[in-house]
Image (cartoon, rainbow, N blue to C red; front, side, top):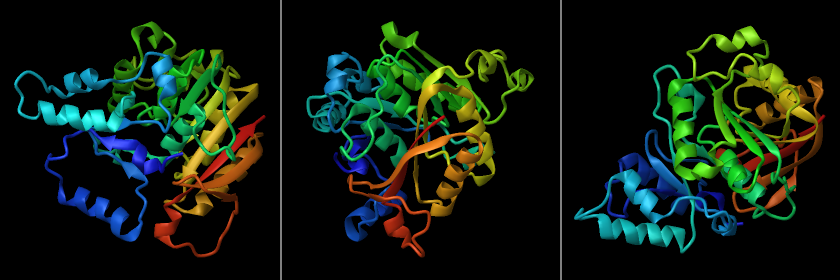
Length: 331
């Protein structure tokens, strides 16, 4: 597996103007070894290129150069056209990728942190594709029904669909900005012939009564009958970097347990950037809600692994950002 931050590329030519914040963030990695754990900027585009893009070739899916140029409005006699094409060619290295638009930050919703791609989502995509270290569990999604909670850009769901999932339901907080952005990412990456397998809905964790699902404008939140019809319906539930809100642990665990099939698997991944204790608390709450922790391990951004520890004492913040927890749960 290649280092996780190296698999996400900002979609702009090399000579594009960088903000001082961007230059500072990039210098941290090269000078101090501070691994970036969030990528992109609200409203902008990034490209995920898997360590092995074979699956994208095989499905004849994913985003190619022409798609990127068209989306960015670059064409004709634009002075940057040639440079952009060279840049994208170098990024793709003859392969294909998954292009992601990051949701615009919305007043009152910036605390959701959905306007970035986090390392947990990248690691989930690598694990689903089978390009993560062999010491990590392989989650097979071919022919399976998939539910992603707190999807953000929906990278793991998009990869699952391209890998042959039977159906994928992508959910996040019922905000028009977030849900609309996810639907745009689906349209950009999933061929028309496969889009019928993907549905995108808003879902507030823990709200599992039908009447609670009708409080947000039509078309954003899932239909009122969804929580009943889909109870126990999903073979795989994905949750990438959803553990940082301690007051939502119980609600998240309730939603996972409600939608997971009796023989289903949960892939739960989180970074330690908000503290190890929150991650440990989440897995404890999952047990209280009837979920079984089948395996858990810590992974760094370069693929190294070590045993999971609920506490490691004081941890250097820079070093801590390099690590993630990967847990697999069942019923």
